[in-house]
Image (cartoon, rainbow, N blue to C red; front, side, top):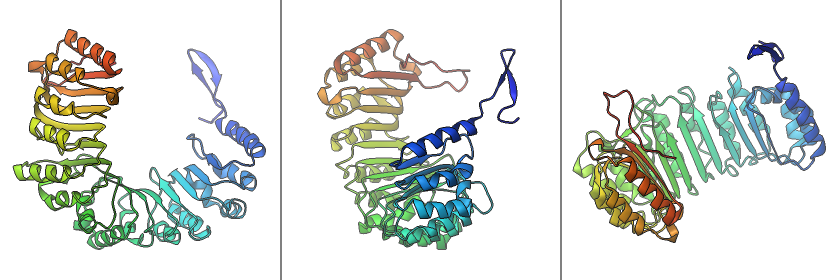
Length: 424
C-alpha cells in the first residue's frame, strides 16, 4: 500500500497522510528559519533523511548532534561531503538502524571522514551492521569520544577487541543482541583484547553490559587493579545469558573495590545457591557506602530478611531499591525505616507482610521519604492483605509522605490469572 493510498475506517474511505512529504515541508521551514539549530532528529517513520539531509546540510552550520532513524543517509557520498563541509561542529552521532550489506563500510567512511578526535558521542540502538570497519574508524576519535553505546549481533561482537584506542570513555554501554555467545569460551582472543581495552579506560564512570555471560570475567582484573572508579554499573541479562553466581566469586570480591558506585544493577543466575556465594556478594556490597540505587534481579532470589536488613543497615544512603528474596517478613521494616532518603522500594520477593507491620513502617517515615513508592510484587497468597487493608495502607502512605502503595499476589501457576490489589 502506498503512502497516499486510500483505506477504510469505520466504513468511510480516507486517505493516508503523506508523512514523508509533511516532514520534508516542516524540515524545510525549520532549517531555513533556524540557522542556529544544534540538533536534528530523523522521525521514526522510516528513511526520510536520505532524500532531505543533502538539501538541509548547507544550512546546518551550527549542527552538533545528528540522530538518524535509518543510517541510509550516510551511505550517500554527496551527503557525507556536505556534512563535512557545512557542519564542522558535528560531534554527536546516533542511529537506530541500518539494515544494508554495506552499512559497516559506509558508516566507517563517514566517521573516518570527520576531523580526527571530533566525535564525543556515538550510539546505535538496533541492528546497524556495525563491525570491524566502524570500530577501527572510532579509534580515530579515541581522545575525544567520551560516550559509546553499541548494540551488536554475533557478527559484530569480535570487533569489540579493535576499540583499543578509545580509552577516553566516561560512559560505555555494550549489548549483545542475541546473548548466545560466551566470548571467553568461543572468542578468547577477542575477550582478552576487551579486558585489556577496559583496563586502559581510566576515566570510565558509567558502564553497562547487557547479555554478556562473560561480563564478570571482563571486569574482575580492572576492578582489582582499580583501573577506574565507576559511579554506575549495570550488568543485565535475558534468560540464558546471565552469568552464574557460584562461578563468579572473584568478581563479587573485586566489586568491593568500586567504592565510588552510586548505582548498581546486577542480574545473574543464582542456582545452585550456596551460603558462601550469598555471604561473599553481601560482604562486597556492604563496602559500597555511597550507593543510592540498588537493583538486583534473579541474583537475590535466595535472600531473606537477614540480607535485606543488613543491606538497609550498611547502605544508609539508598534511595531506590529493587530486590528479590524468599520468606521476607515485617522484620525488615525497622531497618528499612533507617533509610532517611528512600524514595522507592520494590520487593520482587515472596513476602508475608501484615497491615500492622506496614503501617508501623509508614509512621516512621520523614521528609526525606516524600513521594515514597512501596511495591510488593509477590505477596504470599496464604497471608495476603485484604482489599480493606491495602486501602488503609495506601491512604496512610499518601497522607504521611504523599506516597503510593502497589500490591500483587504471587501467581498460582494453576490459575488462569492472579489476584492483585489496586495499584493505581
